[in-house]
Structures are given as structure tokens and as C-alpha cells.
Length: 208
Image (cartoon, rainbow, N blue to C red):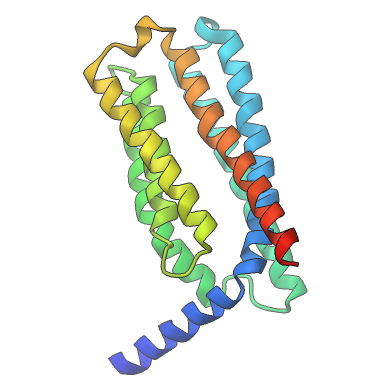
């Protein structure tokens, strides 16, 4: 297959993904709701426990939550593919993973290095995760719904501004590192996902 044929195939895939934008929104809404609920529950638990839980344990709790949310997300993608009688690992999913994985991998690695490292910077690790998750969502701008790109912008701005503040001033003067980390994660991965799901649902109902 030559370059022109490859480019044409990619354009056809992108067009197909854009035509299925409503379907992708319908998949992301339950994922966003589930992810938001899990994130808020984890944040409340860690906030209340505060110093009773060591930083590695708090990091482990968030990593476990992320794994659970991803399992739910891929289960929904698989169910949608089955209903549409399409392959689970489609060309579209392959393109999405290629766009998402670089930022998610780098952000995940940097976050774990900060959290589990000798300095144990839990706030920095949290904000790194938020920032790179936003960048991962924005990396799908070529074929994802506008609502998902806007969500990515919100995460990126919160994470980047938070990192600038964290590296400029001592945020722990306001509250403990564990509680501040829980608040950040609860606000972003929790509240932002729930607001996103609500707005997309309202928009979809109006369009319908």
C-alpha cells in the first residue's frame, strides 16, 4: 500500500469516526459517570484518612481506581462493538490508542516517579496525572467529539496552573498534601467528569 492509499484510508477512518460522534458520546457518558463516582469516592476516603495512609498507599488507591475505570470503559466499547457487529479492536480504536497512549504513558510514568520516589511529591504526581490526561484527550482532536476536546482543555489548564502554583509556593500551608491531592483528584476526575456527562446527555437529548 503506497502513501496516498494509506492517507486515503486514514481519512476514511476519521470520517467514519466523526460520523459516529453521537455513538462515542453515548459510550463516554456512562464511563464518565462511573469514573466520576469512583474518583469522588476515592477522594473522600483519602481526604478523611489523611495522614493515616502513606503516600505509596494513596498512589496505589488511585492507580487501582484508574484500572477499574479503564476496565469499565473497554467493556462498554466491546458491548457497543458487539451491538454494531463490528470488531472490538477496530481501526478506529487503534487510532485512538495511538493518540492517547503517548501522553498517558509519559504522564503515568512521571506521576509514579514523583509519588513513589525519594521525595514523595504526592501533589506534583497528582497534577502531572491531571495535566497529561488532559493532553491525551486533546491528542484525539482529529476524530473525537468537541465535548471531549473541551474536557481535555479543562484538565490541561487545571493541571498546568496547579503545577505552576505548586512549584512556586508552598500549597501545604493551606492543608495537608494528602488532603490537597484528594481535593484535586476529586475535582478533576470526579466533578469534571460528572459535569461533562451531564452536559453531553443534555446536548444529546436536545439534538434527539
